[in-house]
Length: 268
Image (cartoon, rainbow, N blue to C red):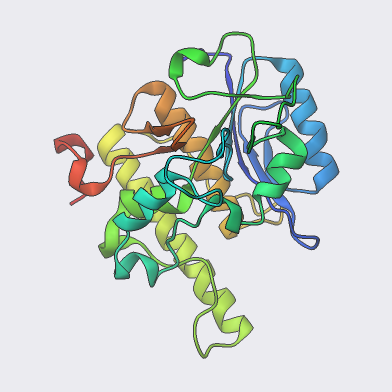
């Protein structure tokens, strides 16, 4: 991996009252905070100018380009259907899901800021700020790049049912404060389990906890942005993260599912 390559994790948000979260520990100065739409737009312009940048984006970046798609749906991608079948009741009950790309609102902010995903034969935008890539050798070639990630699914694959704690969504029959406390505790527990896994398997100690000074301590968005950054970092290092799928099927960075792991990838 290039020493001067900047890796960024972004958890984009399209809602009016919700801000995106950016984690870029090697940016100058480091970024570890929620940002509004205009700030994220300016950051993308900056990264476009820096060239050797990999942005790991938690939102769909590919879509059907030539209708009708072979699998018969304009609203979902084959990869999403495959990944959704992988999830059992234990995963779904804890908020882990893979929705069709057209059913998640944050793909709209991706279109607005990145021009992705392209979704038809008339979608011919030129000079996009970030180049979508699917191979390691496409990164670090003097062009700012972007890849799709799925932090929640990645965390589920790393930790499994025994250690994964639900950290999104509202618990049934619980008040707002009780849910907030429960989510905060779940994020902390997931964080600790992930750190132990990374250190044990990859001797990876570089991931820092959320910054209380930034006002984002133990927020789900902060965790997702860190996992996005982590997926890109481990992918470029060749450490247990691969690109699943392709442009036509849908593609995102993920660790191997638990049944596919070799010895070094197992979580006791």
